[in-house]
Length: 211
Ligand SMILES: C[S@@+](CC[C@H](N)C(=O)[O-])C[C@H]1O[C@@H](n2cnc3c(N)ncnc32)[C@H](O)[C@@H]1O
Image 1 (cartoon, rainbow, N blue to C red):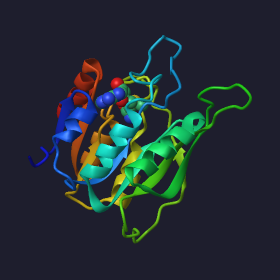
Image 2 (cartoon, helix red, strand yellow):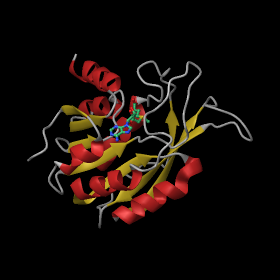
Image 3 (cartoon, rainbow, N blue to C red):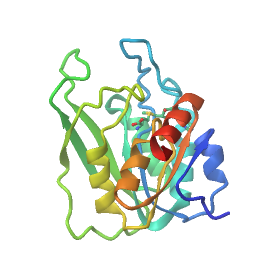
């Protein structure tokens, strides 16, 4: 089955990705649960944020559906970096870059005030370098998290999509939440495929992208 374009699927992304042919996606930009038992001030949580059983199978599927020479950008939780890196390597990805996103506000504080988000750039085989490489330190705007408890800002996502994919390419986000990657892909002139486990977030993403 050729992946449907500009579609948001509701369900477990491991099962959903198993239905896609190998090599059918051009670029993956994803923001999976950070494995930190996230809970915001109003009590909102993120599904699968306390359990890593999905981690290896999800990245194994991402590697399979990505085209040879394709790239993946994955956000991750810094305190569980070893688990993410092990899953990426076990899937076959090569680590080719690391990006720090600077916030002008601390998202939490304990021993330090936490002023950054982070993502790795991962390659499937030999990926071509972009003609204009991005800086690996990028700015970050607060979204207010109105649509999702961990809603990502559109501007850095759009820059990543523009740099690591071509117009018309298919961009996959298997943990799409409120659909930020999908909106950014659309703005950049790419096709998108989103997947989300929670019905309420799937509904938000559909409203955001289709209305
Ligand atoms: C960190 S959030 C993504 C937020 C998103 N970047 C945004 O801006 O709205 C991770 C999302 O993955 C979803 N999720 C967790 N496990 C999943 C699974 N197995 N399949 C699909 N989605 C899953 C969660 O419900 C959550 O919405």
